[in-house]
Length: 448
Image 1 (tube, rainbow, N blue to C red):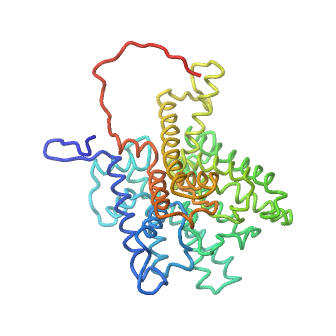
Image 2 (image 1 turned 60 degrees about the vertical axis):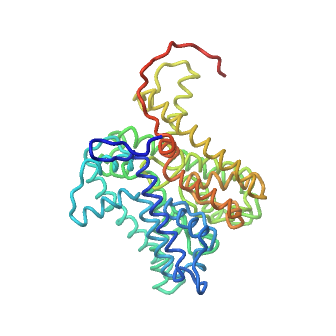
Image 3 (image 1 turned 135 degrees about the horizontal axis):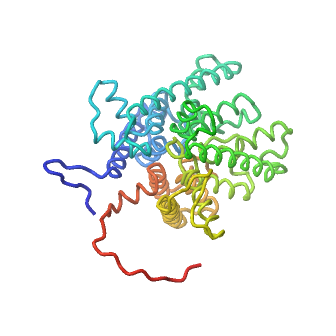
């Protein structure tokens, strides 16, 4: 495996390696800051190295899993560090780097543009710098509106200064699909509150559909004129959100430990919130550990699918899932082409989608297998935590706080892989792109 490629007098790195090192450096910086005594309320020392590494990784990878309670553990300094890591992690370190270049007036060369294209997962190199400017603008506008709305709502039950801070923190955390909250029970206090439910879900749904889709909607203003990517992302997100709401409502309706004793209104709000949150953010308005096993299994599926490509969410992505489903339909109906919205999808793209799913399952199985060795817990809880970490969702079935040091390292690795993407991680580990000099004779094998 070659980490560097020499071109004349220049040494260039593979884009996957640059992404790994960029996110890794940011995580290490966050780890160091969390270890400072001023980062936590505990006098004389900050977090231990493993806990600091876990929290920094969770923030940079916009996951939301935590081994300490955010509101009672971190000082204002620690929470601001956490918020900055979430914001940079949500943008991606390349987007943040280009943003700093723009502020400082530095020239952005071809290499930086190529890395940015790879980081943002966009089709064309043209206009990537302009895309960064729009991403930053969209982020600030949406987060400010969300923060103001939440601050006004919370000002009725807490001091205005605290309400503003809560609004800003939860708005940034929600839009970047991080799921960090300042209350020990996340958003359970507001389980039936329409304002909190609507604003928080709109924030993480908007962040989860992707910046390219948002810009496409803004420019086209008509669903018919949208790109195929935007149409698939929007339709699949809508379908999964509706199905998620209905399934959680059905499986939890009579569960007294969650929503069974609620009135109809609170049941609907809780089911809606918990039905849409698994694909993107790690907030919860009911106790995940008390949900039925059916609900938890379904939530694992939603987490695995995840958000949209080019968004702040994780998972294999809704577009990848859609391509796999349509390809499956093409095969069983004995057709030649994969068609979506009267457009043909190349089999090369189908193969890439299949590769993402295979790579994701391999990484999940490896970490899950190791966790069954290091942790004394139910298999369902271990699998739930593993998928949540991979999909950078941040929902927990109650295992995270009790993870062993080895388990915390394994979940940290899983979050890192999930944020980079399974295929990017595979490229970084292997980097074996070579053109074959020999093409062998074709032969068939039996499958199925």
